[in-house]
Amino acid sequence: MRTKSASRSVTIMWRILAIIFVLAVTFGAAFALEAKPKIAFLLKTMQEERYATDRELFTKRALELGADVVFDSANNDEELQLSQFEQILDGGIDVIVFQPVNTGTAGALVAMANQRGVRVVGYDSMLTNGPLDAMVMQDSWAVGKLQGEAMVEWLKAHKGGKVEGNVALIMGQPGDSNAQALSSGVLQVIAQNPGLRLVAQRSHDGWSPDAARETAESLLVKYDNKIDAFICNNSGMAFGVMGALQAEKLDDGSKVFVAGADADLRNVRLVATGKQTLDVWKKIAPLAENAADVAVALAKNKDKPVTELVTGYVLRNNGAIDVPTIVTPVVAITKKSIDSTLISEGLYTREQVYSE
Image 1 (cartoon, rainbow, N blue to C red):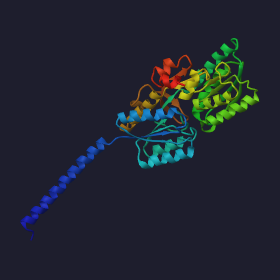
Image 2 (tube, one colour):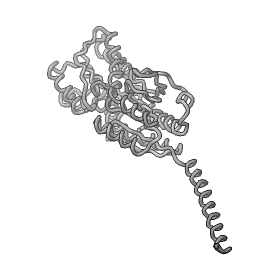
Image 3 (spheres, rainbow, N blue to C red):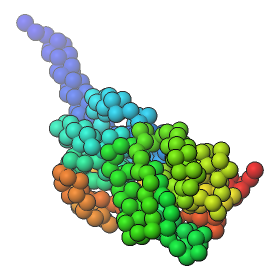
Image 4 (cartoon, one colour):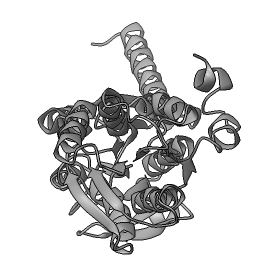
């Protein structure tokens, strides 16, 4: 027969257990409410100096919005990026912001993420045939068009008003949609000017500056240094081309037109000294910050379509779907415009650009 004391002990025990249960539920719910969104930021490379800025600005903005960020880059290695992508998914993630190494095959990675309920925001380079939730990018075609139009004006100034000469197009990763878009803007300008002769249109694995230099060296030999313009898909490859020109004492903006894109500091310094003719500043702050804004909004509103969460987008078809796309500004950088653009907007200081 159970005593009153024993019964009282049992009652107290059950009341304690009930309190513990209520507290566990309460604190568990509070923890769930306070759990931070987890965002992955996956870049294809850190090879170009600009990507340190992409990472810094993206991470800063996402943290300000209350998210945690997991970062990785793939050294332009497609297999490494696949491994990184799988590890991110296995570790648990809400949204992935993704710059693909291979834009032609990365759609399969997006499909993999979608199958696990993870949304994907494309970054900088539009992948093809993949169900992206959103895209943040510059208008690469417009970058190429800026480069081509600047070349036309340079030729007029250096060839008595004529638009004629030998042009080499130095492209990035073979098959990369961004490299193709950059190049298409240039090619349109060339097609509109029959006096221009496209003597080379070369792709370079990994957007390699060294490979670009080798291409330029071989072209200078083949055409007896008579290349009037080198238009490059990025600043790194333009720097490689400038190395080849320097060896021939042709690293002079009055002798050969050279254009890059990314506004890496070492290229901007070459533009400032008149050695490189043009670079294009693809503004990184609006790119990185918009991507963070979209990613966090998607993570916090998992059941809402992206079109209800962002404004200012256009629809760009990537072969699979019409992707809501935010397009950010690009600016031509010349010797005359460095102060009023890059320096006045705080990307670089005067000391960084002009110091010896």
